[in-house]
Image 1 (cartoon, rainbow, N blue to C red):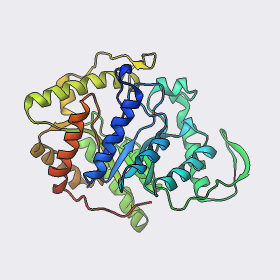
Image 2: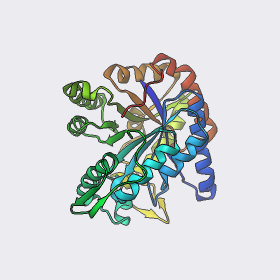
Image 3: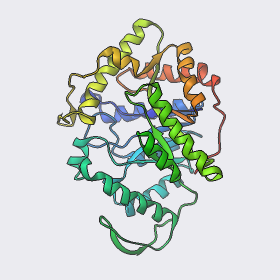
Image 4: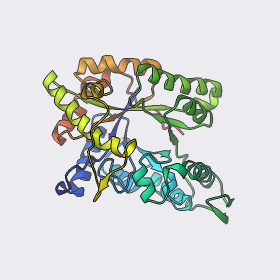
Length: 344
């Protein structure tokens, strides 16, 4: 099982400055590269102060310029917000500029406030996403592509420059049945159990494995990535403090993910959670080194290829760096972290 650090911006205080936020994220990327992590992941979100990254491809290029081997995953690029004729060319250039270390995760959007203000409401984004994905694949794979759909109509064009290598596409999907069908279509998969229990995670992995087995040799290189909050702690008091910080973070996340989407001047209003702090603790992987090894064992045994660690939920930068370094030195050796060939 490989390990990935999610470079997710959390910006609860505007006085901290966006320049400092992104400098911190870049420092985490350098640390992950130095400590032997397989990859880092970048979100795409606009108009909000959590997961704040309106320029993921530009940041990918910046990361590549300051790291040696770590892969860079967009997790995810929100296709309905882009013109595929522009995005396809940008992806080709980003792949070139990152020395072919790019993996493109795609999705239809997650936050109603963001998508609505950008003119693509979640209620209608699925249809546009489906057409956009089909078009993006065609533009990357073929020359002289014409289109006559609902959202795109144009005469033959060829994206230039042409890709110099296959750019892996990863689908962000949660439901086991959807994971099965997306895997059957040839996509890498990124998922998370969110508040689901262990059995839900096993159902997600089983759906991927069933589809991959049915594909036979054609699916040999497909990977399953699973994302969770993961952080090392030193004591019960340290663990409880970090769980409280995560609970406060999710009081904003829930507002825009499943709640009313109350945002003022770019700042998401924290709202009381339906979930208790104790329930939050059950859904997070915040624990000691020994406990972390025990908790991750079932993921590796189930067949998860890549564990994406969300480490930014309000903890100080120095503590995040310490956790990443300690995890790399004391947890990763228990799992297969040898380099693997770039898949596509």
